[in-house]
Image 1 (spheres, rainbow, N blue to C red):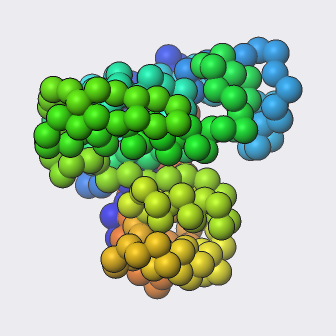
Image 2 (image 1 turned 180 degrees about the vertical axis):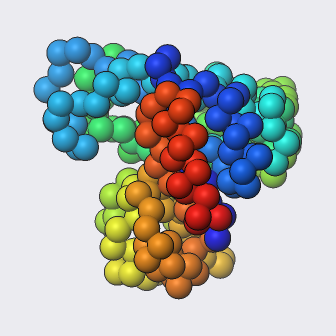
Length: 274
């Protein structure tokens, strides 16, 4: 099972290039980065991880810029977002960022996507909260039109694009796309409709939820099984053994949003799982 990592990189933590080198040298499989453009100081949305909201949420580096640094100093390390808040982006610009990172990294990029939790953050991007799921799906379809081999137009409920020349292209038509969120029929239907799999935060309850996801996948006419990558996991030997028993091939461990010394000590501790 591949052991990847995630971390809230900020202006106060270890730098992306330093972390990426250490991960690759130590044999870790990948680095996934979260996204928050900003956290409005006055908000009504309770933080799902508990209050007060951890300091790092308002200091998060842009994941695409940070991953570009990581790509430049590594050769094998997989790179990903966990998660890109697609509804908060202009999809034409986001499609270009994704395709460029995929190209420059040698197709090492996984696009983790999600709907977000902060209503105020999304509102500042012009997102109507009740439409965020449909908006995300529409923007993914628009981006895939831009990634198509031939100029392809798209006209959807939230946006459109003319048939266009848009290079570079992701190497496999689109990067591997994993949708994050809590288990349930709505999420699983969305995964089966347009994603390659699921990023379950924390990785709890998979014994019960994996069969439900696989059934939704099959009912949508998708071949094989969806990819499932437990994300932001606090590891124990028993937990990782359980994931292996479930047939999972990758897990993403949570690193502390800390300085270089603390992060490297944590990597030393996590090395037992490699």
